[in-house]
Image (cartoon, rainbow, N blue to C red; front, side):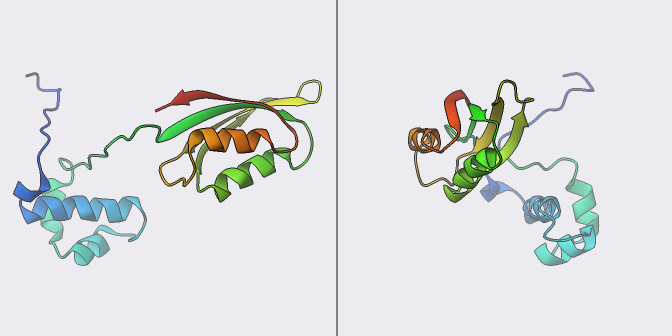
Length: 148
């Protein structure tokens, strides 16, 4: 193995020392802004700052990827006030988490919009979401262009 390449293992938390688990918990608190300082994070998880600093660069969370967790939609919308807002409000009401929105300059009264949505907490299916958005006033076309 070269000096620059990192070497990783996938290990169950059940066999790790408490200091490593608490380091991961402290890093998560900091990442979510539940605490503002390393000192607060260490106090919250009941670990020393020296242990945190010892392990912080070698502990990373592993997020399990789930099917259809993020989708990207392509829409053609009528260039009228409130149309995009209605689409975004519907996605929010379905508990979809909007990650990105890209809108092109409207041409001939139509705007091309792409929206990336995290669907993990949505109660309805992706197909149902697409069908419902298609029925909103001002939506001319909607297409699912990516799933990840």
